[in-house]
Length: 531
Image (cartoon, rainbow, N blue to C red; front, top):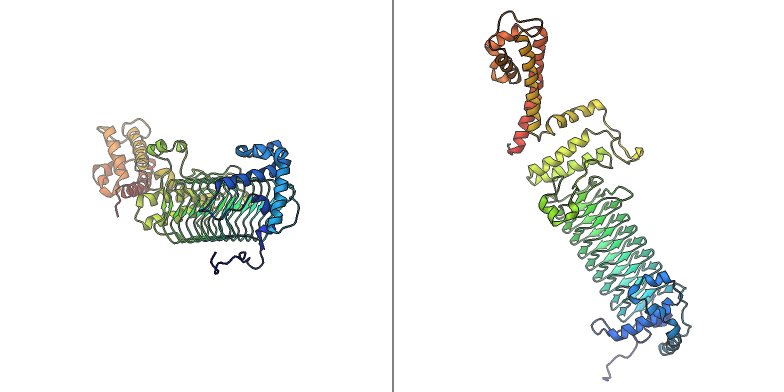
């Protein structure tokens, strides 16, 4: 060995203890430590896992054994291997300069403030009691892949200097990563969190992979920082998802994620591209209405084919990028249903919300404004129609919303213009509705005039009118279009000789036809993109 070689043990950062001074770490690495991930020894890992799981399973119940079916045999070997493990443990303690007895599996596993110099691989390990790794420092990477944590887990203030993975890990109780630091990529793919999870004020310097993670309870990333890409694609969040005040520097993806409880992104800052494409917001026990209030989106964001079942997202005070995209229709197309059968019978936007109509109207107005800036009149008009619809709804028209959360609504007289606008023209979008109303108005007036001109009622006309049916229809038609001057000739003379009640009807026809013609013009303008 060269004289310059340093044989001293690695320096332990201030405030930390060497991992080899901890009985649980000695038991985890009973047959030796892994040097690094590149020189990973699978046979050594298997021997270490068998020893640990044999110790971990000696006091577990049958149901807890079943929670780890892939390694259940390892959990039931203590009676055969216990004496060998105890002997080996004492031997290793002597070699590593530690004095102590084999820990009790029912005691908390304390890894607090430890410095893990070597690569720590705990893949497939079962942890029978609470794991406390507060302030731990992982220098050479760590793997908790497919580990099973039967009790609570605390990684508060822990630091992962290189790649860390929790792929497929099972967390049966509460998990805490408060103020944890991940200096490299962190992977939680297909992990399952049964209890509450918190990443409060956590710092992710590398990429974060949480693809297909299942959260049974509440999860919090409040004030967390994501410097690399964050991928939450395919996640299922049954509890509240809270990303408030988080800072996301790079791209973020929630592709095909499902949220089943309230979602909060309040005051979050998104600096990269953001994708909520094909995500679903549909509450089980509570309404799932995503709250993006005071958010800042600095790059394009996609809400394409996202399903909002309970209400419209809250964008109050939010800054949306000009290229933010939304699906501007209710029903999915046949092609979309063929590609994803779960879309059948569902709508992208709720017809009736579980939120205050005032808030729903404000959200629709915000989305309409963004789409109008992109020069998308058809898409913008869709949200204009939804905006007008909610303007005509009373505040009581919000299923399941407590009265204290309802805003003071408009009176019926204030809402009536919006209701008429919708009934008569689908808020300026329908060509058919005003035409049908005009046809009804023309037919009603024609029938009334014909009854008089054909002497079917009292009073009768002063003389005989030839072709009373044609004259009545023509007179009714002229009343609907007074601007064309059809009633200035003989029709005007006939109208002057009619009784007052029919003259009033004639005037009413003219007055009522004007807004209908206006609505028809709006629909034609919208349909043919006229300026």
